[in-house]
Amino acid sequence: AQSVAQPEDQVNVAEGNPLTVKCTYSVSGNPYLFWYVQYPNRGLQFLLKYITGDNLVKGSYGFEAEFNKSQTSFHLKKPSALVSDSALYFCAVRDGGSNYQLIWGAGTKLIIKP
Amino acid sequence: GAGVSQSPRYKVAKRGQDVALRCDPISGHVSLFWYQQALGQGPEFLTYFQNEAQLDKSGLPSDRFFAERPEGSVSTLKIQRTQQEDSAVYLCASSLGQDGYTFGSGTRLTVV
Image 1 (tube, each protein chain N blue to C red):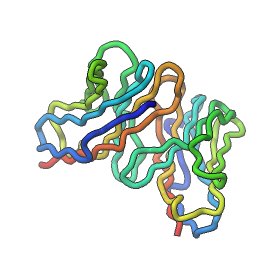
Image 2: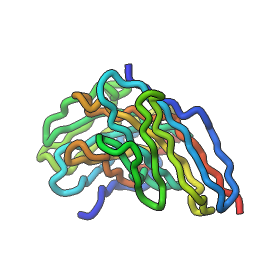
Image 3: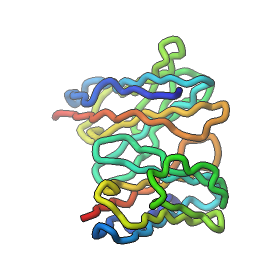
């Protein structure tokens, strides 16, 4: 069965420090992996995706994520956090073979302190 | 349009009332999805359309929930005889293919 785990409910980072939001997944076929961000009272905004190719994916707002097949992980990273990065972050996966459904993690609340 | 548009943004319904939520996907997007998101949780799949065909409705929580997309563009999610447990944000997303989905801002439904 497909699943996504975001082990941290909340991550606290000081502004200017690097941040990491963790995600691990389980799929039967090739994984298509996504990160979305959600600000209060807003819809989900696409940040980046991994379908194939380079394991390091760069996305919007300076975020990047690294696909690690052996560890089945797709952690979201940013070298220098901004207060405006504070939001709810969701990791999602679908089985690239056939399944169109996205399976979502429970979300990680990222708090950047000035 | 440039994005996925959902209306209304907020809906307050009395228990037992019927509601209809509208989604205007990005023009040309074949796939359309409805998700339900409870407070502080990730989205839960409700149903999926490919053009006008509803290919998967396995996530609809009860027969009070009904979705349609008659012309393969605009979609409506209808909830009959609303209950308090239906209170949530209902998200619509559209997609052209294998790329990530584009979400609307959602409709926040509160049943009182």
